[in-house]
Image (cartoon, rainbow over all chains, first blue to last red; front, side, top):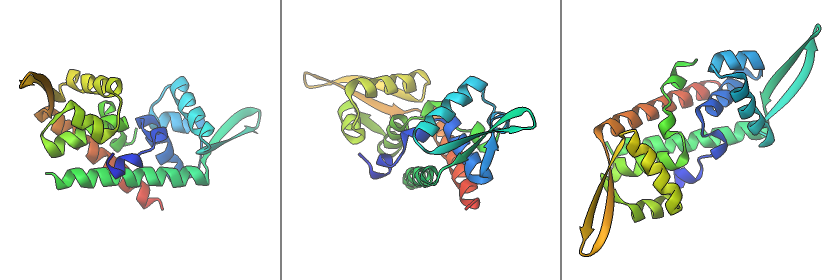
Length: 102
Length: 102
């Protein structure tokens, strides 16, 4: 297989997960509603992608109360940052490879 | 939603489809076995991704005989080339956006 394809990480394939990781790399710690609004996902869809990324240990979840209201925030782990950057590098190689063929 | 995410095309999300379109942009017309070996996919998996791309009118299929053996080749359509390039542009924007946050 072409080298750059080997480094494409299935955990980040979908638009939703690319979006989640992008937001978390820029904004450090983000709550559920901010992610939902930024990415325009349904609750169920966002929750399922967050769960998958949490299971892969690419993000960590913190639950706390703001006053009486529960507030859940998400943060990329160091492993998540590294893995996502490797994924973006692989996509960059794929783009460069395709540009050369123009 | 962030602009660059809007232009990410779900038809090309998976590694397999990124690979198929990359090969077809470089090599013009490719047969099933070449795709299979280049991308290291199973017959069933490759066939299902090719079918989806054909249904989206991003590639066209040609069946012919080489001697007595049937030979099926795949070629990106003009619409497929344009759509894939737009997808790569969107990925590039996503990468640039993330690099700026380093």
